[in-house]
Length: 224
Image (cartoon, rainbow, N blue to C red; front, top):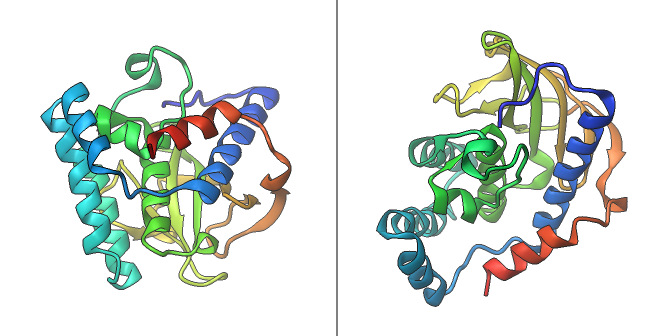
């Protein structure tokens, strides 16, 4: 999704609350050990390439489970950057705004910057990376002059985060990504004012946002 550079306060607030809800839902219910029947269904309905992407994702999660966290970051970042093509929601889903699950993104083989970040976040979470170390971060991409989404990882609470991005393949410290201006960061437990160093000041809590039941049901249906 290419976010408009200038968003109304109300529209941005709604957008942000929706994504926090998505993160809260996934934090509770994300389990990516899909059945063989589901994989066969994916192959039959969506084709061999979709099946291959999902099967390779499953293999990645098995193979990377016990790797050091830095290696997990590299492998997950490379996997989604390599296998997912950037496409705006309006062309991919025929709507202006859509939050795809990692499975939906892999089936399509495409997504926007938000979908890359969501898929990387929840894959790393499944691999045992603590939620406290990760933020999906809303930034301004200065060279493109537009809003953008990335995943940031904090080795420690006050450490300089590294950036997992679909625009730049290499994982770099945020201090080296002078092309990005952080605005907000968030995960399944809350919302923070973004900083280049440290996790920032917490300004919201996602636990009160018990809405978007359709999205939760969609997540549950994927595991059947």
